[in-house]
Image (cartoon, rainbow, N blue to C red; front, side, top):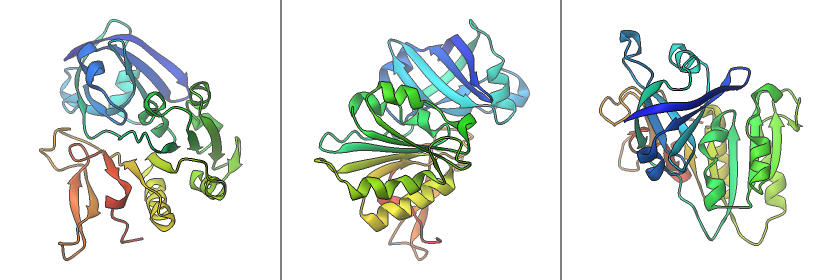
Length: 258
């Protein structure tokens, strides 16, 4: 569908936020869904770009993105009133767990993909990881939503110095009344380490595996990830992250090579 840009602003550094008037998409969007965006009709932008939905309400779809290539750079230059073509919401979403407490673990702009969970699972804990203070996103917004926010940065400029997964043992040492259900999104190395830790600690949860997506509808098999398959000689199979994911139960994620 054609969606008009209501706002497209630079948050800081290479990070931007765009708001689209897209009532049909907003009505169906759930936490963890993404939209496939056609930037414009130029030949060099024939392929759509996938973006996690940060928020969707009152007919407006909000995306938080980082400029990392030609497509996102072109999007960052589009002004209010410009229209893009949105395909979505796409993919498999996160599953709210009413009998659990949310533990959201994210790296970088993975913070956007999990934001909507704050409405369906209020009052949880979010562990925000980033390379530095310049890459830290939505900390104040999660706090305003009633979440206990804990931060780790690689360079120690904010919070604990180190990886975001290093914040987990402290939480496990002081369990609450409800067990945690983990929701994760971020760089693949972080998610693989998180999946291994969750398996060791027997923590339930779901992780969003972001991959480069071409078609976005499961036809091209360009965004496959490894998931467990006991019937395969290799004990894994390839799953399409755009169709079968991007959200997968953590226990399905193949970590056999680690």
